[in-house]
Length: 231
Image (tube, rainbow, N blue to C red; front, side, top):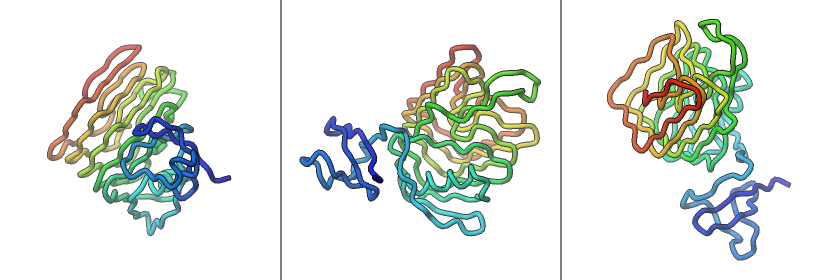
């Protein structure tokens, strides 16, 4: 009970880990922790850690807390500001904010080792009236304002070969919506989608503002349908 399975790339071993993030088996590695950030969640989920959200504002310093905040946001709990303190290691788990309907600012540190192999997708019509499966990204659809400020995203991997409008950051920026990307670095990351696939955004119907520097380092973008780009 309350145990999770992680693959530790440093020692090439699967570990059984308790709710406190400490290995309990194999006995040879009992007490081992993820100090070198080499663990990957075999179930693509990590234990959530409850953290305070005060009037929509919160700060997180580990993957469990960020997973909890995202879980609450996806349950329509108001979240308007997330500050990342240091490196937030998601350990290979899924991380997807379903929809940004109001205003959300994410700022501070680094989101590392997140994945979205089964990212949030929407079946239905796009703004252009086309049917299909759409919106695969860390933030699949922005309908309000999303401000990403002074953050690094490292080793983010997204794969949904059925979904169009796919991006590492945002799938679709909707009409009358705004995406602000300010001093953001994405590195060692990969996205695979079907159609309209970009490193930053899949497709834009609203407004995108670039402030300061946006850096892409070792970023791979692939599509199986058509239209692909680094932006």
